[in-house]
Length: 122
Image 1 (cartoon, rainbow, N blue to C red):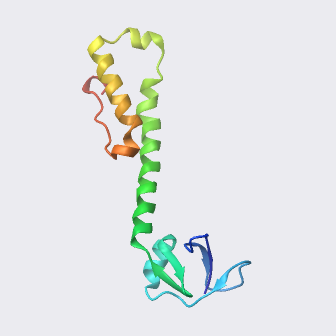
Image 2: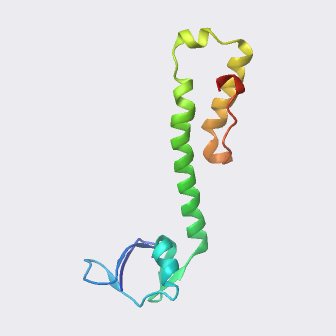
Image 3: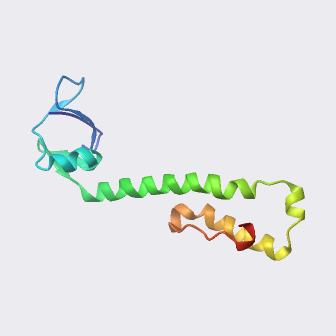
């Protein structure tokens, strides 16, 4: 098996057959099924691939943040970026709720909590 790793030794790509330029030849990991699903969490150490659960958790966290950013774009910005006429038609209470909801969306990748949409926006 051949792998290409980053500077910390984490697997970037792999091949079972063929020759990859710049790859290192190593034995297959013990848990091949896990490797096939989470290769990015395996780190080359002393010529062996070692599973790093912290790397897996970090990867999942980053994927979740990407999803939250996508949702913020579609669920929040489409409302926040409405024109002046729309804003002139809402009450002061609604404007305050809207600002709080918007700020919560801006902080979603830190809080990891999807904000509840104000009922009047439904």
